[in-house]
Image 1 (cartoon, rainbow, N blue to C red):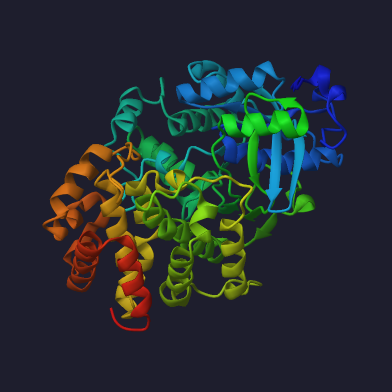
Image 2 (tube, rainbow, N blue to C red):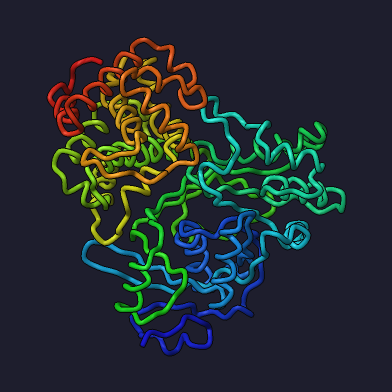
Length: 496
């Protein structure tokens, strides 16, 4: 029988599973973290666990919190197992399990007073976030802070006194610390966003500005928001993973995390209030993270989008199965070589061709169980971040865009809500109703899809893109996904 995960029963778990060599009483909190999903626990929390296990910097443990009901459920489940998480790192030929214990407490989302108390406490020197790419109140078309979002308007109307957003709570805490003579904490985004530090600063200071311009200016000048590039493929947990953990390692964990063995974290070294010595466990600190970030977002995340929609339309379930499809794998390789990598500036110490090969190997890992549906999720937010910026650069440079236009057309076809076999696609975007309506119109009038100003912005006015997109969508509808991929591959090197 599997052992229910808890501190008291760690000794009953098999020796093949690594576990903390420290006790909760050895740790004190230095970080408050918003958003306790799988990626955080496979990435930031795992790095800290390794650091603590080596005996270093044990005054940087995590207090978790959030602002959504899902965070509350996560917190209750983790508290019931003493805030331990089993992280299973997988390669094609191996699986390694480690129990991590770098989190030592949780504040329920509804308890704003308790959250503020911890944020104002001088022992909190870093506030970090994984609230998803769509959680930063960014207008998709302009990529600017959306001051008109109802959540932001509500926080501003309450003058940050009853904030419902993480950014309102952070702003309120920073101002309370200033009033009490306590130095500001560093705000560190761990989400997969271009310029995630800048985006977070815009959210916190942009919200504060709706209440007080001087306070917002102080936040911009006095508070550090380092940019960072984060990377580890970490699928959602299902019954499949819980059952595998029980069968393979004898552990009953309500919230296990399965992920790839690969991980990367590149951070700008701007932490005026101090930081853990994460370089001891492989984090790379640099003066400018932008080149690393652009490389990852355009090649890895753009690559995910490239395989997601053709695979989704062809009823392929897992990402590794898509990579086993020779046509989809060739499309990914050609798109990266011809239209993405030529627009990625050099990255210090990185061979982009070798990086591409690593990405392809990671996508093909059969142990991960990452799903095509997860990659297709939230396209209205992800396309403007992962595909359209490359497209804009290509248009400015006069470079080929046929593959990028095809990715956008396949997304449109996916949002029609039906695969090529006639299977219904369940809603998979916060804006699914609107997307489906536009996709149905676009079947006979492709340019209708580009009228979504919040997604495409002024791209809809670019004749070259409009023509390439319209032709690609018409081909997808008339000939199908496979013929469309074949047409692209046969025409490599030809404009557009």
